[in-house]
Amino acid sequence: MIWTAIREINGEMFSTKGEPWKPGIWALATSVAAVVGGLGFYWKIPDSVAEWLDYRFYDAKTAKAAFETWQAGSHIGLRLVVLAASFLLFYLVVFGIYAVKRLDYRKQYARAFGVRFATIRREHDVLDLTGKCHTTGTEVFVVDELQLAYIERRLESPPGVARTAPAMRVEGLPPGTIGTPSHRDVGPIRTYVFNFTPPLHQTQRQPVTLKTSETIDKSIFMNLADTPVHSVFKSKVEAISILVMEPIDVLELSVTFPGGYAVGGSSQIRVCYGRTPTVHDKEEQRLKDCGAIKPETKGDRQTLLLHVECPIVGLQYYLYWEPPV
Image (cartoon, rainbow, N blue to C red; front, side, top):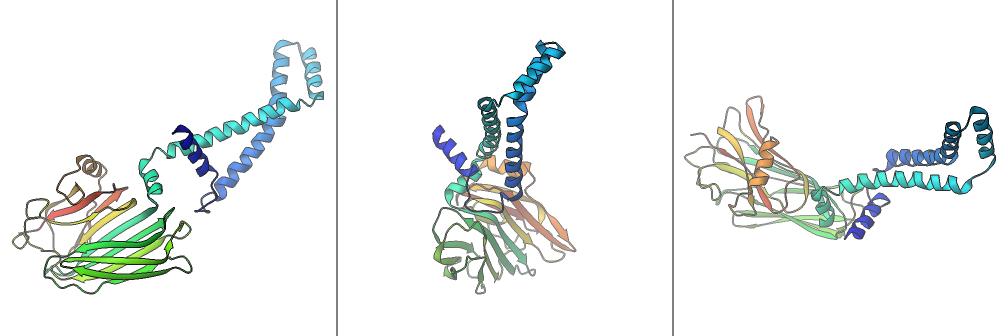
């Protein structure tokens, strides 16, 4: 296990695959510093140490003669040992930096998973007091060691309401790759489907972006009398949510209300295990401690925003609120 970890860290340190912009100036600067520092160690350190020792243990005249005698020799073996030691020290410092990075289990899991999302953002723009809502989804991701041929997303609406055909597009595909979006409806659940031919693989150079949008009638109930009891909260609240299926750096859920409309009470966070009502207390507390809810007001329009850094795969994140009477 330890040897495997050491081998993987060295693979990351000396890797030339993917994200070529990252090394750039930093790699050049550190390489130059290492070479120059190494040469300095090779030429100066042994001489400086010898001179210090001579002047410490001899009088000035004897020390000067001893140092000149030292300089007359090449001492190649000792110099090479000092040079190797200097590069070993530099290597150990860099190795330590990469090892500390590996302590972030979320990033390690994301790389092992094979597909990583920089952002997933779902925005609900409530157009009027009937609850008609324009919903937009934006997802930016890269693919690592995975042959990704298919992605799907789900969006559920209240039963029996009208919804427009979705607008779907893919941006940033590698040359020669075709993205084919489609959707299917089963009752109130709409599934967005994105197929990639050939499958996406190693796309770190150019992240891929998925965009969806549609308009749903009566998507938000807007008042307490019309709001049914929520299956998870067991009370009359409204909520938007997303089940995290892949590693994500930043997840955002937002709802913007019509001008002059304000929710009752304050908005809240709920984090549950999957689609069950089982509350994940630790993750929920983390979000509360870091102020994940960020309400905004632009003009006379109120926006509720849930901003989550590195959500956990397998948990469902809710932004919920109490509608006014």
